[in-house]
Structures are given as structure tokens and as C-alpha cells.
Image 1 (cartoon, helix red, strand yellow):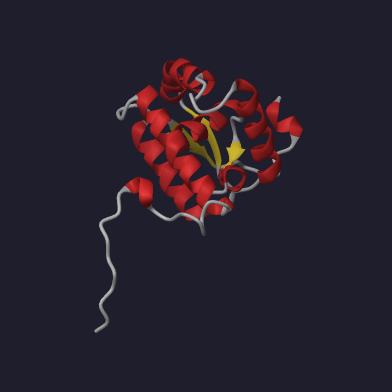
Image 2: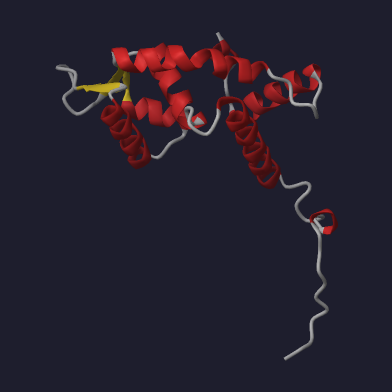
Length: 159
């Protein structure tokens, strides 16, 4: 067996050269950092970012088909089914089978779901307006613009 020159490396000394220009790696780190800030602001007992985003879309789009919601959020249908079932168990969402298409499932928030969104929206919106100390307001606007462009989000999605 060959002797390897192994050294004790501290975090500041890790060689990241092959990853510093990797879009996937950087967006993954950005997501982790964003979630850390989210939980810092809303607490570990508050809503989870993905769950709350889903509930907001349900509030804004009552009767949206489950498949359309999964597609818009880029969630696998099986995962969406589990998420919707968890929301149902909490009393936040109801499934509606429309008479005109018995194969589709439409979703709507219940009164309890609307109350949950209303209670948590102020903290969520406050979190969204908090400027990370590493970016200026202008840089944040540019980053959001570039991310929307990168994921193909149309300008009309912002209205």
C-alpha cells in the first residue's frame, strides 16, 4: 500500500478549484445558505420553505390541478402526492375531483390552511425583504433577475 501524504486540513484550506465555477455546486450552496437564513428568521418550528411556497401557490390558485402544481414547482408527482397527503392530514388542503374530469385532482386550501398562510405570511415576507449582509440591494435584484431568467420564469409570473 502506498503512503499518502495526508494532512489535517481546516475549512479555509480546502482546495475548491474544480467547483468554484460549477453552476450546480454554487446553486446548491446558495440554496443551503438561503435555507439557513430562512430558519434563522422563521425558526425551526415554522413552515418549511418548500411547503410554504406550495401553500402560497395554492392560496393564489384555488382549484389548481395537482399535476400542474407539481409541474410548476418541478416536484415529482409521487412527492407531490405525499406532500398533499401531509397537508390533508394537517387539515390545510382539500382534494376535489371535478365532475368534468374524474381522473384529475384539483386542490384548494381549507379555512385552516388559509389561516396558517395568513399567520405565517408576515414573517415570510419580512424574511424575503431582509438583505443578506454579503450582497447589496442592487446585487440581490440582479441575482433574482438572473435566476428567473435561468429557470425560464416568465416576466408575467411576477404579477
